[in-house]
Length: 270
Image (cartoon, rainbow, N blue to C red):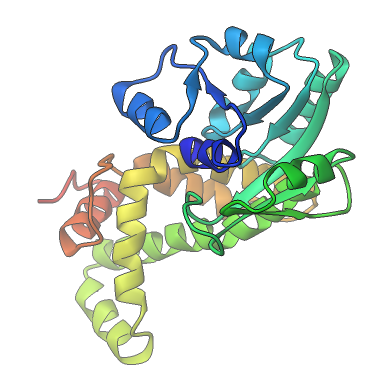
């Protein structure tokens, strides 16, 4: 996602920096293909940049913000974090003289217009929107409070990724009780899309679930802060935590079997 977002700005003629320290060869290849310039370290990047765009797994959002502590420019946090975490990061950035804009990305990595939205909030959100004008990333103002963009992301992902976890959980339950075939047959008759959706959920859980654990925990925290039950998404975090890891997995019966076996404690299926 980060390289694709960076490319949107590079294609508009901006010099876009990234930090290679601690990153692997695949990340470096994506950055090079996107036309990004290597600043070496995060500290080196922060010393040169006017705007920092943070796009990382949600569990790392606070660490990234701490790594640029003292940055005096505009800081966009576009990660899947709770409004509470966003406010904490905003305090860190503004407390050291920087400006903070909250962001939430919905959709795939932006490679063609019309598929990916970047919701923005905060006093300087309009400045970030203008940076992305005319790119494949559709930047929109969320309005409302400083952390409105994060709230939009939490609500949206609470459904899309939360229901993926729920599908895996109910299918795992059916397997544990010995009625998985009966459930699949019933789905075929009354909910014909669910079997395929469960295979897609299994592929996502194996390829991306390592990132989604913290995202579900952030959504749970958002729910709790709003006075709503947080158990749905705490459970979703556990589903993704238990799922095996395979970034090259496919939406297949084999992948679903591996995930369901891990969830039910039967080991990894073959």
